[in-house]
Image (cartoon, rainbow, N blue to C red):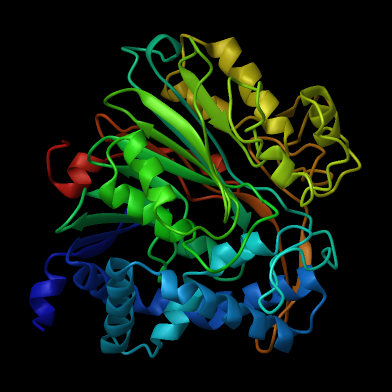
Length: 472
């Protein structure tokens, strides 16, 4: 292996306050570049942040730390056989690069870190998958303050401002676990086989919550808990990279979901900017359901509750709400009206911030025909709760998982206890990063320097310039 030749194709620098890693080559080469250039940061993720996840599992399940760590590893072992070969090679490259840079990590540790958010999703609701007993084990030991996270919308043609190009907007919400805020990173990948693309993640992870590629295809992930979940499948990081590397159209993306086993319940917002086609794909371990835009409307949006209910928002097909009702403790989903009343119940601490779906509807309706970058920034920074008809204060956390959980999220702290030396720490969910993009041109605006990220402002980048290639 010619290390210098491999590393010459990559770079790590801070641009406009943003950590930017550029990778190019085969899967192993991109992984090696990643591991070598981010070795010190990966060490923090492996030695500190992973222990925080064990503490999260412990608090959610009521297990002691030793049992929680055992479950964490069992989840990784269940997922490992389903890693596609290209990403197995990339993770091998990360491990080799780290070790050559003088930071000792093992391949199983990298595999474990890459299941981190799939396991976060698995244990974020009642009736979670049990690594020894399967699905529907028992309720959570404790309701965590932040069960929801992430939302997105896209608009085009008559809905969008300017020349009607498809605009894609996403907020990613999660815990500020130790070591993570300062290590949020933009990854720019230029694979030998596949489309060049960008995504946002953490050192040592091959993917997380989506991005967009040089073919004008975009995607976003949102927690969408379902009764049928397992770690025996592909998770959000794997699907992020599968789609961004290989998909150009919405049907191609749907094919990838249908042809790969899936683990936790996730909704994927996907769009083809050149053809102005978009959909939300709601997945579980057993189902893949697709919701398209309402006829005549050039917009689509998604938060963390299922919207695949026949007759709702133009959807027809299998009723995924029936599969979400048990994990969100919904009392009645027999009709659309009963279902909507159930998810609006302010005393339901399991339902995942459904008011954001209604707020997107209001904002899109109010701005229809004029949705531009500046309009989108205002929308993604919105703190109004349409259920309570109140605006959350800038630094005021939501009352619960279903009260004042606004598009620009900020939840109360939870207190966790990890193994020494980390020990006790507090963390809460807020917006980790927010992005607004025109995938067709490659222009995008990223907020990633504050928490909630929107408060730090947005800086502009261009994927074509980052890749140094012409968009296809």
